[in-house]
Image 1 (cartoon, helix red, strand yellow):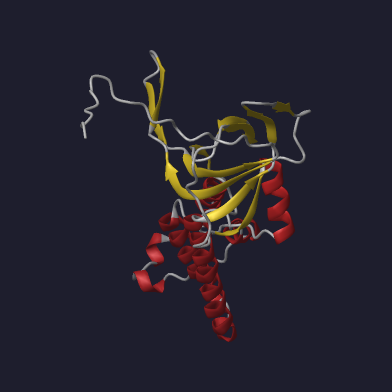
Image 2: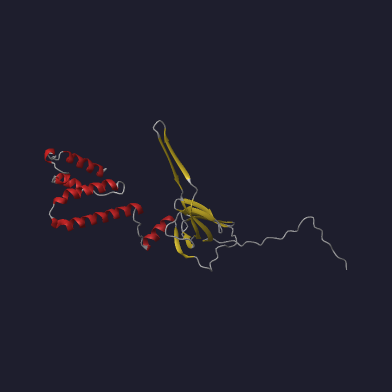
Length: 266
């Protein structure tokens, strides 16, 4: 909008510039450029190239240089320098537009604080000696990650919204444990159990199925279709701590029905 207003003011001022006498025009080369008014110079100086309409701004800037060419020859170097600066500024604008907002750099304290607010803590990379897949234990926990709650046991895999500051094959400790339960006891937090923890491993960062958003306003010729794929993080639960784990009895061997025992007489 700002560039459009500048173009409008430019054309308005050019309309009132004094035109040369046609009888005195012998050739096109004999026309000397008119000196621009101060208002025109201010409107030209405020113009900056934008990535949305670069062709319009480049024409206007070239027109500005043509008007300012009547200055003395001592300022040729300054003109070249100013052109280089405008080109550099244009490149910077293009870089910002293509890359979007510059990524913010977090300090380790800020990373730890934000991760604790979400409900996890990064321990470190997964080692070869770590046992990820363990035998089933009759213990479950209810954990909160962000604004969602999950009921998990060891060996389960859950999908959460993408967790920042963690990579694949890194160990996490989920701090916000709301409830622990087993076959013998149940522990309820108020609202969180301070001595409980659930350990997990980041398996992958993936995308959810596409969701289509369709908007329509009847009799307005308005239809919009957009798609969205939510970023997810897959976690594998490895261990639950903070509750006594009952011993698992080995399964009993049952005899098959319909099989007769054959006794051999001596």
